[in-house]
Length: 220
Image (cartoon, rainbow, N blue to C red):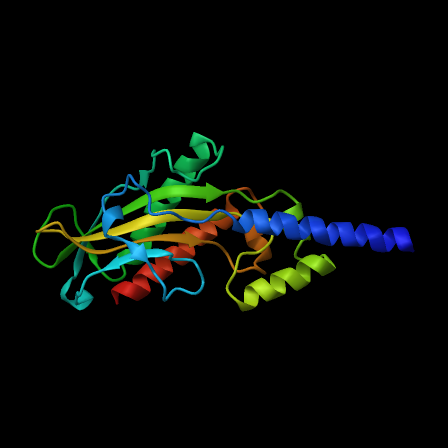
């Protein structure tokens, strides 16, 4: 009985350590992004999803066309990809290009040339974390994991052993190249999204989907 209790205690301790390590990957105002000098800490973002932001006064409703540049994979020394393969980075960049295009075309006419009432959007993939195989899924049903993930779900935090994606968003007035908005964001699935724990990149791609929704909400 005592050994069982001790083993469970060690399991809870290990879970907490792993959860803390997962949450330790935090976005930075990446030096290689054009808008980096303009961004400041966003004190209004309690979730930590958007720690750095720049915002100019702009009426988004005055824009009805948009140029989406090809997604950039960040190569600066301050990237946060860890040892992720180039293939996985390319997969995430392609998913980001496709998903943001699908979302944005419901609000804008997608164009390739600068003109009046046109925005230019640049997305820079700066980091990502893959799911921890098997353990990430099991931690949703394990007693200790269920408690921890329940707390995280309530506060819009990250789940245990789950991947994430980090990227920068820069929005310009296309004719003048004036910076209108910029931010760095870390996106991840809901803490209890079991489907997003299956597959190495499932959480990161779900994070991209959530990020596209968040941008659309800003531009309405």
